[in-house]
Amino acid sequence: MAVGTTVEIYSLSDPDTGDVRYIGKARSAANRLKTHIRDSRRRKTPLYEWLTGLLAQGKIPALRVLETCDETVWPERETVIIAEHRGRFSNLLNVANGGNEPLCSKEVRAENARNVTKIRTSDSRKAEIYRLKKMLGDSLRRGFVREDTKELLRYAARRDPENFGLWANI
Image: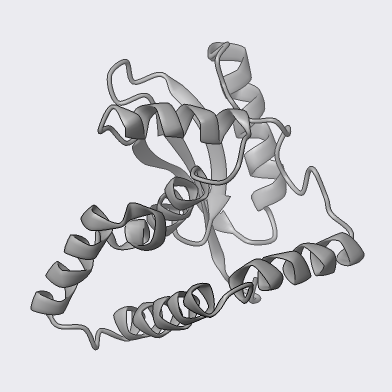
């Protein structure tokens, strides 16, 4: 993260009971929730399995920003907040205790990046979808996408959630 960046420490809660199920951090908690939802289709951790079950019921978790802090203190603050919630909520899905845990080495991160690149470029259709998503994401961030185009993206997300699900809530 860039120096001086703020970090949001957030919770994801059961939409029916309000029970906090996960604590995380991100520059944008709302964007991170979208990433969690997308990742739930291919990752198998307690968090993603819980999300998969919610999504199958047509529900999404309730998102709440618990604290906004400077990037220099987020590891400590996230660790404290997770510990507090573990004491109150027995069904917290966090695997790690917070902060930089579990820390991956640069070599592991590089290998993970290579593996993701292989998947993205394994066939021409996947490569083209990735290229188009990147262009659309850049255009959305810059505010260059009209409302009628956003509606088409939401339609594509409903028709093909595997490839376009991340556009469902734009």
